[in-house]
Amino acid sequence: DFSKPGARTYLCGVAAECRDMGFDEVLLRDLAYPTQGNLEKIDYSGMALSKAEALEALVRDMRETLGEDTLLSLELPAAEALSGGDGEGSGVELSRLLPLVDRLYLTGAAEEERGALEAAAASALGGEVPADFLVWEER
Image (tube, one colour):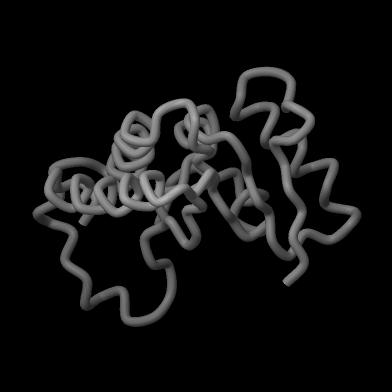
């Protein structure tokens, strides 16, 4: 549960170890709450933050831990980014997360979806998307 400071501290410690070993980028993959499967078995009642707030807190803490010399990147399926990233279900809100990362890797994006994905990123960033911010990955 990312709403717990101990969980965030642990993950930030792992990222700091990677940085200290010489990694120049930390890539967060599958950073979302589950949206399929046996969801009724998950108890979120003890969360101190909303899902979106918890993910933002983790990324903010990790950004602070890594400093400016280590890139912090996020990988999302194109469908998640195109859904508006409103935090419903998965907790992913593009407007909360994208300003905190250096790159966004998008997987499974069809060529005709790229314009919409660029627009979603621009909206989340509140303006223009830096040239090297979006990375298109085939999956």
